[in-house]
Amino acid sequence: MSGVTRDFDRAVVLGGAGFVGSHLCDALLDTGTAVVCVDNFCTGRQENIAHLDEEPRFELVHHDVTDPLPELGPVDVIFHLASAASPVAYHRLPIETLRAGSLGTEHGLQLAERYGARFVLASTSEVYGDPEQHPQNEDYVGHVNPIGPRSVYDEAKRFAEAMTFGYARQRGVSVGVARIFNTYGPRMQPDDGRMVPAFITQALADQPCSVTGNGCQTRSICYVSDTVAGVLSLARSSEAGPINIGNPVELTVNEIASLVAEIIGSDAGIRHIAAVVDDPQRRCPDISRAVQRLDWRPLVQLEEGLKQTIAWFAEREPNHL
Ligand code: NAD
Image (cartoon, rainbow, N blue to C red; front, side, top):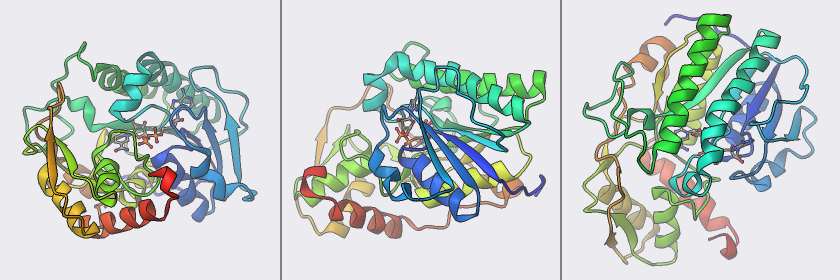
């Protein structure tokens, strides 16, 4: 393992009220780091961070990261997660998504430069597009349609990576790029179109899980505590990456839907609906770089992670389902 282990006094989490961001805020606070969460709530929810209202080391700044950041004071690490992330969200906010990846990334990097802080970008497996190589390692440069329906997200992240490496090379900012693969867990939104919350919501209502296409396309899904641990390991190292953070266990979408229905005890089965344009047929990370350089690997088994996620959804008020 290369890289130096660091501890942080004060972190800024751009997009900290979102699904992954709110778990990251929790994990940072748990390890004694004060957290400034910057969010405009375009896809995040107050409810995700409501439990931190009385936490003196937690500060919420309601701000759009595409505008220059306000004075936030000295900070030693900045995590940039502020971006619509689900297809439903980035189709609703296409230009905002491009701006969050471009302007938002530069504003985060400028803050890092000002305070000599480390900058960690939440990039995505979507930079690989519809990959022609399996599993994808970080040297694969991708197969992306620059004007396809997913391009506002994919190209925003590709630009964000380029901007991040630009600040590292030209301005000497310490950076880390995490290419996060599909993550699931509590605090996902039931209606954001992502597979796991959709299947859980449907199976809890005893409706069939709607699987796009023939369901033979594969996904590898990583429980949120594992993803957050990977992002934190990258932050604490001096690795620039990019580094894949994901779970390499590859399953078909049919298999994931069936497992959700089985855990919930729904016998409504699966319903096949129209395939999605540009939907990747296979998605599986090669995480050998993360294992080697960060000594990180996912620990939560799929069945266990799904049980925890299902329990969280089942506890919500019916109007949240
Ligand atoms: P999310 O939508 O739940 O969280 C994103 C947060 O960013 C939200 O709170 C939103 O309000 C905020 N935000 C968006 N644009 C903003 C802006 N202009 N200014 C301020 N705040 C803004 O999404 P998530 O699933 O938690 O994803 C978090 C990050 O991780 C994203 O950058 C996403 O691209 C990346 N990622 C997530 C996954 C996944 O499976 N969840 C996979 C790969 C990458």
